Length: 222
Image 1 (cartoon, one colour):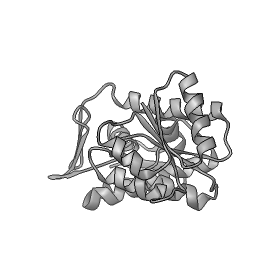
Image 2: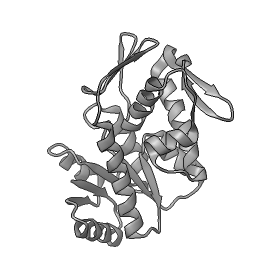
Image 3: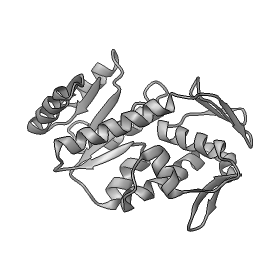
Image 4: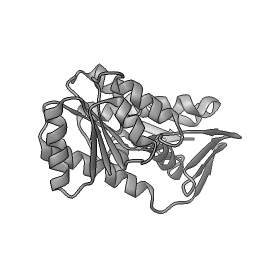
């Protein structure tokens, strides 16, 4: 099930029609209040979230979703007319999985949706318990502990940390991280690695030092 939160009727109806024609189940909402109401009874497989909304802006909604363990792992693609790097990074920093700037083609949007869903499906395979430097990840339970403190990560933060642990001691370039987790390689998107490393370090607290920056190359977990 894909939820669409978009106040522009023509855009919302077009997305709804396009996704249903591709075999997706869809519910759409013109107002955040209606979205929150629906979320009480059903958790979507993915949310398409507009930034400029009445009642409450999309960034605020995204932050609420990511701060709640029950909704923190819902894949979210931002829909926005703003295409400046600052606006894009703000959305990614708040926990968005991807973004699409208006105007956009429907087939391109479908492709981005499928890519995000593939990443989430990939995160559900080959699960195990990972430990390194006081950090423990249980891939079956989707839990993370930094020392004795449980922390809550978005799916991409979770996958990023797991990948670093699985390759601990080895440097992973930004390109390798993008290919493994984001499946993209554009210039703007490459900076999303740095954004997610920053938010991941903030959540790890005193354990942030375990993630080492290799200037001009990438990152490694020591």
